[in-house]
Image: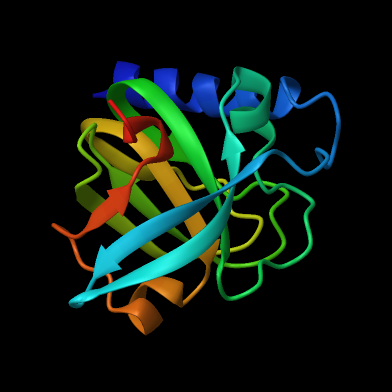
Length: 153
């Protein structure tokens, strides 16, 4: 357990070092549908697809608008852990498996915290939203994110 914790801390520490442009410029976007509470909610999400983009995330960025987010491509699926280092606003994090099923939710992650948040379950994507969005949209574990890379294939 201690080895796993030390490994995760090393991974998290490496993420800050890999962020060469701080804050990173806006990334390409896609409309991502979050299907919850019997409705579909359109989120304009920046797509973090490279290691550097995932490492920088929303650090140093302005607050997200209500229907904005950042979608992290975590493929191949595996455990995923994030922290809020240098992130000035609370975030909700939706962790989804390869089919887009939400398997874990972190609510209102505390700004600037170095506490690791995530899951050991296999995750292919993480959608970060403004803090409180998951509750406002009625998002629950078992709901879905229509992953943009799943379209047409």
